[in-house]
Amino acid sequence: MWSPNNGPSSEAAVVEAFSAWLVEQGWECKDLPPHGNYPDIDARHPDGRRLIVEAKGFTRDSGTDLDTGYGQILRRMDGAPDTAYALVVAKSIVRFAQRVPAEVRNKLGIALYTVDSSGKVELVDGARL
Image (tube, rainbow, N blue to C red; front, side, top):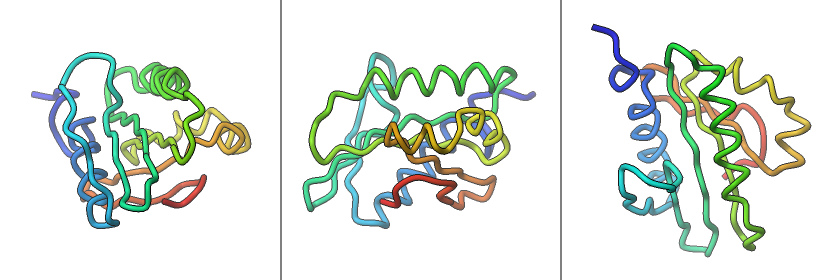
């Protein structure tokens, strides 16, 4: 039976694939509690950079979930130096993330990435990590 918590387009799959990709790029992903007011991924680079990530997978209400994701990122923005922000979504729902124009995401410093059903990560727009 279909569930938003499993499958290649689920949030868990997106987090797993993007975390693995970050590690390949030299980042270390901090272990976070599964519930609470934490980002989906909190990653640190050896050069001192930090990355805060909200991830969203396919659900029955992906549009609303993506709106929530933007709100979660905005609440976590604290002006800390060397901190970047990214919204990472299942490729099948990227159109919902793009309802916020690229120009707005860029001004806010939010990079947009997708993860496809095979786990491939792709930058849609924003600063490359």
